[in-house]
Image (cartoon, rainbow, N blue to C red; front, side):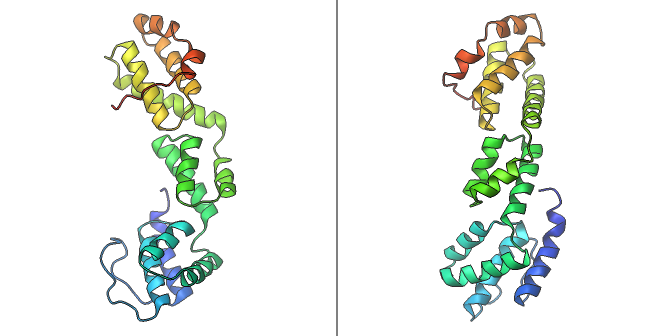
Length: 218
């Protein structure tokens, strides 16, 4: 995500200062077993967290899951995570805001798709809502419109009905509502050429939005 890569070293140093963690292998790779298994279970838990955070920022739930998978007891994991919360090494609200910015501008994902991703990462509903507040509806629609324009150029040789199905399917996979997707593709086709305009004129967005469209796998 934008700006996060430059903060990996700072996050790692902050974590080591906060917890007096021993040094580890190259954090950039995020791979490999622990250099030696720490006798102290808290040190082992910190090592797991540091390696996870060296790859990219993580939510509290993601770190908890990583520790649980490695057999760290829940009370020790909670102790480490509480400490990391205190010093700002993990911050689910900031994570959510950065995730929304990166995934919307980078992948064109809709508010609905972004909300689903954040919830799967364990971000609370309140924090998800606050993060999505920064994405205004008009910005989301313009992003969808730009996606349609780019994809329509790719589908320039496709029959209007084929292009319509593929582009609406693409928007659906990015989480845009059927009504919005159909309307934007209809508008774009109307401006393409005479054949596309004729096809677009036959489209009833309300009727189609109520039906199930099979997204094209392409």
